[in-house]
Length: 168
Image 1 (cartoon, rainbow, N blue to C red):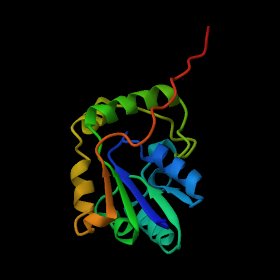
Image 2: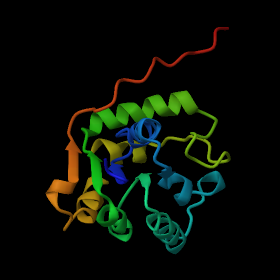
Image 3: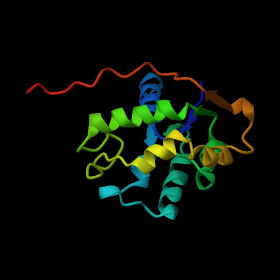
């Protein structure tokens, strides 16, 4: 069983959900990059700080790290025994982001600081629909042996339960 797993993909691809399930099944410690990227009110952490925080995690013998990856964070893929790449279609990911916004509207998702309340913009949806983040992910995975990358082009996770709305 891999002891170091990196889970990557565009926004809305299901990285956090997949990672939580994998951590529950394996008992490996889970590290979510959104917790390292953001401070309260979506204030970004300086790149040097989150790269250093990731470097500390990489020193461990066991981990699951999920989240966005680019060239500055490619050490995660290099150090991993297994890279799970959720390479899903943009429309599916955009739909999931919409559902996530509805579910967490006005509150923070579990992997974010409590003050980083869920938000949504048309620009962000367009980035997801066009899979614009994919180029940075592909660049970060350059030089990683194909045998180490498990690419999913369809959803490996079961659909989420329906969103419950409070009755009036």
